[in-house]
Image (cartoon, rainbow, N blue to C red; front, side, top):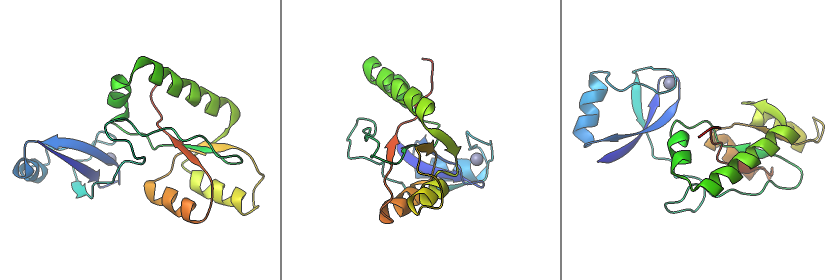
Length: 159
Ligand SMILES: [Zn+2]
């Protein structure tokens, strides 16, 4: 089995298992692979992005939010639900509590996270706690600019 990271025409990334490389190519040619987010069958292979964090088999470690700025939940991941299922109960509860606190105390900025974090950092916007999603690329850029943020696995509620 091979795990491929795939990307649809709209830029959604997801991971998928294939028996082997040929199986992937055959399915891709026949448009048998659909994006779990938008259903698009225009799929290309994306370079495997290493998971943030140094964890081996464990899910990405939670990094405590830095003083002034925001925790930054990881982008919604189709595999996050499966991952959440595999987590020990206590860990899932901890993550859910963390999520609740973030939602209660911080201002949601959705996909504008990087933009807002920058404005706050450079004093163009009021200093406040925000949360939202951003891409790995943006997260790297923010880190390079010295903007502090944390990431946490955004696991679904419920079971
Ligand atoms: Zn898509």
